[in-house]
Length: 287
Length: 268
Image: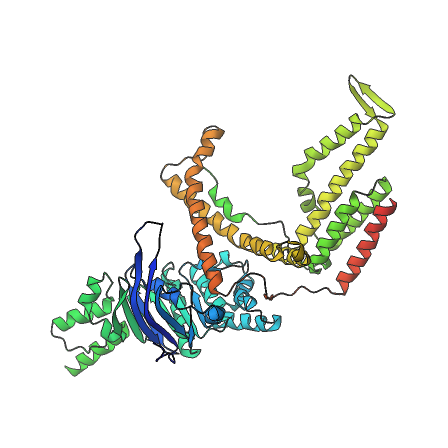
């Protein structure tokens, strides 16, 4: 299917199975998954552990190659070896454990790692590093050793390391799963800012529903398939489905649904505490 | 109780930050001069030569601004070896007998030879300490990589060695922190890391080492994927954020020290 290659990222009927030990049963991680992502979008992928969301993420920059189907990034097939490094520069990836993706012994050397691999001239690397550290608000830690930073700070350094390569898309695989609430907020604010101000396409894999709510579009995965796709307001109304897939329903949405059951006339699109407060106040002043 | 908390304060290398001339020299200059000095010391065989070499090293210490006690700290672990070298040479060399007791004979030649070897060892250790005390491990790695690069043609993997050193420097504190965590977890469940004989104590380390190794391998795996995702494909075509550069001071030090050490080695 070459037809819609003009979309930024096209995942076309992709299947993937992990082949374990010889003789062991093949495990299907992705089953005929298709999706397109447009430039500038903020897409969240949610799903239970083992739903295939991380496997899908690793397909977006060719870390894994599909056993069936194709992935196109900016018109390039990830199976094409000539484009492998171009694709990895366009689609940057941030992983769950901040400790295991920082390579160098100081913050700035680590941020420089990607641009160094691209073979950029020294002066350009310097300006990219300074810029990337400023974007994630870590400039003052440029010379610090990574192990002296908090989890949230390390993850912001990891994001800076990817940003310094000037990617058009950022794929984040559960970037906040190992962080405390403060760290989570720091990282989520950074991600939102990159999407809104720098126009970077964001694909956020998460199992925190309150993070997914911030996306333009949510994909729900289960057993290697995409089972729901739509705007957060629509997807999160299906409380029963989410429960069935063992996903947490955001408390605000749950509250809204319970209040509606008590025949309170609340609008459908309540996703955050602020929206709930506004809606309740309007209701009260209306009565 | 095992003083687990002390792990965090371990420093790698013995670098003492500073702004002295020696600190600011290119790491390659310091490595080359140190190398030359080490080789040169083996060619000197007069006390005058050692005196001049000691003077030269003392001047370097003075210019580095490093308190001398840090340099002598490096000598402490090898003091026995130095003493042993001195004694063996003093008593085992044949020559003009100065003192005799039973089978022990102290000779004039032995005393002179032993003294010289002891001084050579002390100067070797103090001289190389100046390098590690004034150069950060990172700069040392960069310098070694750059110096070894021409050896690539004869199969010296300069970039890979430097990358391994960098990753080791990056992960040693992380793994120490993890060791501490596992130790506390095992101690909370009644593990005992310090009583019993050597064998029992070695065995009690097993519940510490197994999880540590498993986690280290998992980290290595994840790090490899993250490096690939950031377009790492070996040293080929790679550039550096911090380019090493020789300055006037480097050329002066290289030329001056080079001539001096060469002169010492050849004439003294």
